[in-house]
Each structure stands twice: as structure tokens, then as C-alpha cells.
Length: 403
Image 1 (cartoon, helix red, strand yellow):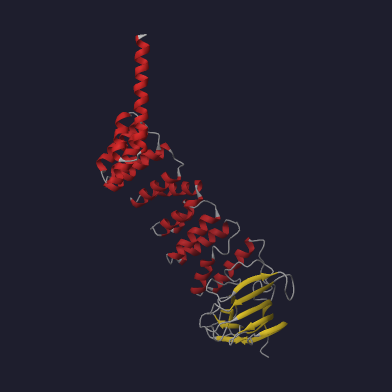
Image 2 (cartoon, rainbow, N blue to C red):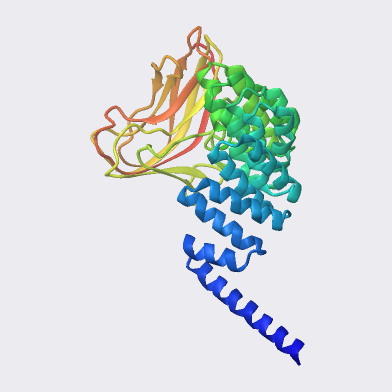
């Protein structure tokens, strides 16, 4: 009976202490958590929570002591070690931070958060041999870290060939992310090497995602590289097609999906009017491009296509178009300009009012240094408002004789 009574009393005390500890912990303030930890000295989670609160309050010594106690009681919780590493970083204790990070890795070697913190720590310490495998494992386990990892590495001194060989997994998105980050750092030579690796993956290349690479090649006047990169992108995507022999314009009949990148038609949010693929009104095939002007927006249209051409050549641009109630003092027209010098090589008449489908032609000559031209929708006075709609179809550019 006496033993039973003692056990009952002990259980009652334990129950009361547990209840009080949980109640004080629920208040989520330092005083309450200190009482909770005192009542449950062998419960790691109470010490860990108290340590986090002490960290927020700025008492680093108390926070360190509590997290050390938590990791002693439960050395298998990577979160406790991670918090201890965070406290050590704030307090400037690099040895403790290193130990905590390594213990967190041992406790959970696949945790993306642990891998991220560990890799960044070792990279900052100059230990790339330790950091790079951790980044590689991180990208294997969690695709959400593609941008973070590639941003860090593109901004580091780690050579791109090392990143490509030892860090990036054989996954197109990771490589594209690294390509984008290299371009932000103006590392075009490394971006070109990354592009070669992207092509060798033999996975579909997303045109919109690699648009910055095409733009960088245009800016660098690398028209040959631009043509090759675009051809490789098209070849990797079954839904895209190259121009037929003798044709220079890409997707001139708008039968393919608009990729809004590279040598396809592109436009941006600053464009005047909205651009829609129309499957109900077309000149040939099954689709055309419809442009709608709402009378409110003004400014230069940014609907365009960059086209590689040869110097000292004669070309003819042909297209079909129709309009419906186009009202403005400055109607839209199709303009051909030299991509770099910017001077106009030729233009169609302005489109106004309503008209059925008709063919327009523009004949022009390229100069001795012309390698790229821009075909675009433009207006003489873009600041004037415009309302109505127009359709474009069957855009073609071919070489012709001088006469």
C-alpha cells in the first residue's frame, strides 16, 4: 500500500509539473519557458525553445547554454544543432558553429536546410572541396534551391567548369538557372560554356527561360552563336520548327506556339496593344496574330522579331494583313530596321480604317556590316492614341535579286 501511495504521489507530481510546464511554455515568453525548462530538465524541446527565445532577446550566453543542453539530451535532432550553429554565427564562435553544422549533417544528411547552411559555411571558409558536394546533394534533394545555389556559385570564385562538372545535376532547370546567374554577372564566356553543357543534356530547352542568353548574344554581336543556339533550342522542342529553305523569318504564319524569345516573335509588357493568336480569322493555315488597341495605351510597340541576314544583300519582306476600325492620327506599320545601327531599311504603308486581307511588300538592301535586322510593328507618332484591331499572317523574308 505504501509503495502504491508513493507511486501515485510521484505520478501526480509528474502530471502537475507536466501540465504547468506546458501551460508556461504556451505563453511563449522567456519567464514562462524558464519555468518550463526547470520543471522538465530532461526534456530537450523545452531547452531548445528557451534557447531560441534567448537568442531573440539577445542573451547569447544563455541561448548557447540552453541549446547545448538540448543537443546533449537529444543529439539526433538536426534542428537543435542548426539553432546552435545560428547562435554561434551571431556570437562569432566559428569553432562551435563548425561543430554544430557537422553534427547537424550527421543527424540528417539529406535535409535541404542543413545542406544549404553547411555548404555556405564551407564555401565562405574557402573549403570548396567540402562545399561543392554539399551543394550537389542539395540540388539533388530539393529543386527549390536551384536559384539560391546557382546565385552563390555564379558570384563566387569557383570556376564554371568545376560547377558544371561537380555541382550541377543532369537536370535542365539547374543548368538554365546557372546560365541566368552567370549572365547577371556579365560572365558571357562562362555562359557560353554552360550553354554547351545544356545542349549536351539532350533535354527540351525552355526558350523563355534562356531568352537572356539570346539577348546577350545579340548585344555582343555574336550572330553566328545566336543562330546556332536558336537552332539547338528548336531541335530540342518537338513543337517548334525551323524556317523552310530560303526563308529567314521564324514562325511567320504563327502556326507554332509563340516562344517569346530568341529568333521567334517577342513582345513585352511595355507593348502598345495586346497580342493574341487568333484561330478564327486567318489568311492561310489555321492561325494568325491579332493585335488589339484599346485607345488608352501609348508608346512604342515592342512586338518584333530579330532576323539574321547576310551583308550586302537584297531582301523582300512579304506579309498579309487586315484591319478593323483602326482609328488614330498615326496608324501602325511594319518596319524593317538594322538591329544595331537602328536606321530604317524599309517600311509598309500605315494601316487605318477597315480592310479585308491584303498583301504588303517591302524591298530593302542590307549594308556591308549588317548581320541582324529587326522586323517590328511601329508607328510614326507613337504618343498618339489608337483604337481598333489588326491581323497579321504569312510573314515571309527571302533574298531577291537587285532588280
